[in-house]
Length: 241
Image (cartoon, rainbow, N blue to C red; front, side, top):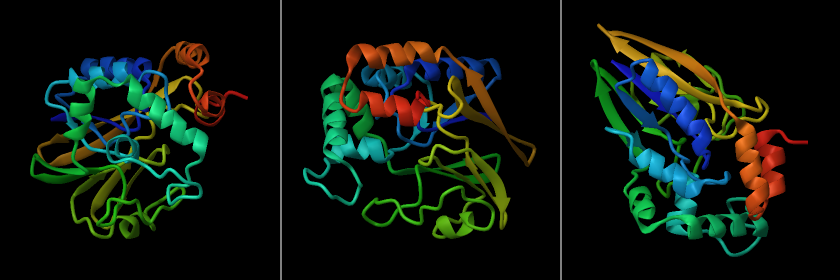
């Protein structure tokens, strides 16, 4: 069985469509999303609607879904490290989403457990505490740090996202896989990242994907909309200097 793995789409429907086309062409039978469908990019409603059309989708809630659904601080400083302009960006985004899109997001769990070809798979956005706050955050994790980050999870595969950086490695009998952000390409400029996990006859493999797409269309939409933090988003998440 082939699973298409995506994470951190961040309102980038153009990149999402390019990746879904590649995953379909590769024969993926199911799509798994590790959270942060929304946030940052210029196409919140279009992105959620695109996700809603994916058959047999497995998706979990990321921190950006939590901001929309559970609220966020009104003061600075706060535990999210969020400034006033970033709060305004999330409020702008909320106004763009239809009632149907909000209902879809509200149904997303914080994690999902799958069993495929006898392998136990955990899908989540990142390691969390009981309050669904992210913990054990380590920049550029590797085989020496991943078992500690996800110390409470005992599965054959852990699929995660959140830090936008690709990391695929085996440690202590578990495959940890973050295929990297689909929708925030910096520093890759026009590349959407994804992955294909194949499980056949007890064998497991994970192949990272890099899918080029017309990022200039995304940047043009950001310029046209000029929503809060637009210039900062272009610089940090799209590598525009």
